[in-house]
Image (cartoon, rainbow, N blue to C red):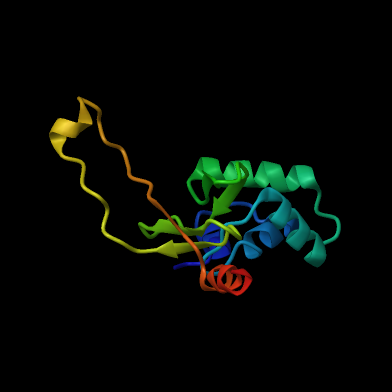
Length: 140
């Protein structure tokens, strides 16, 4: 997967110091951060980054299709920079950890589409991560 900052450079997007830092903190595997996460991580690197700049940049990135906005089970928006590979999400129901998973898309037979034009599929697998499963076992 090409890092977000590299994808933005190749598009000729103006990378100010603030935008560059925001893109850099969204690099890595299994990145599903809130705007507050991006703000805190960005400020740790570049203290002059404002909350408004983070929100504006995230909105621009979503609009450009470079970041996917998803709503987590806790109701908070999360931002996923992994837009180049088709994937689903594996979510721990206890701690909220989210991992990208590659699995076959479920099929929706034509008769079940009721005339709808199918545009995409979003699948979330809800589970309990090993750490939380251990904690549940140890308290039982």
